[in-house]
Image (cartoon, rainbow, N blue to C red; front, side):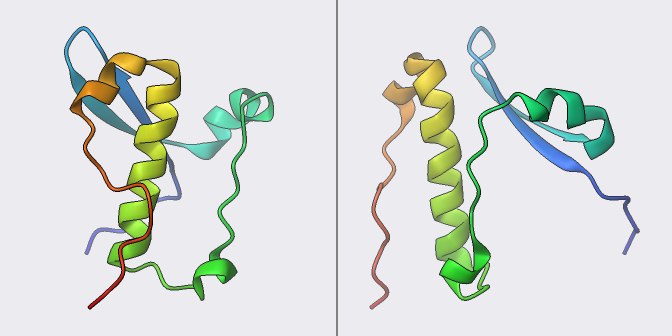
Length: 88
């Protein structure tokens, strides 16, 4: 497996192209922008440090909701369940 240096992930919605775009960026290059950005910590201990399928699903829903707050036209494509999904 290739070794990567640490990076941050930025998710962008390009409304004109109707594309979600993922960028992997050196965190040091983002530091100035992040100092003034909205911060929404996700405490891993609240999830018992389990980064499982449900965690990933909820994280994705949160990202889409945040993009939709600033670019509401994407909401017409969203049919995600907002609440946690109970396992059988």
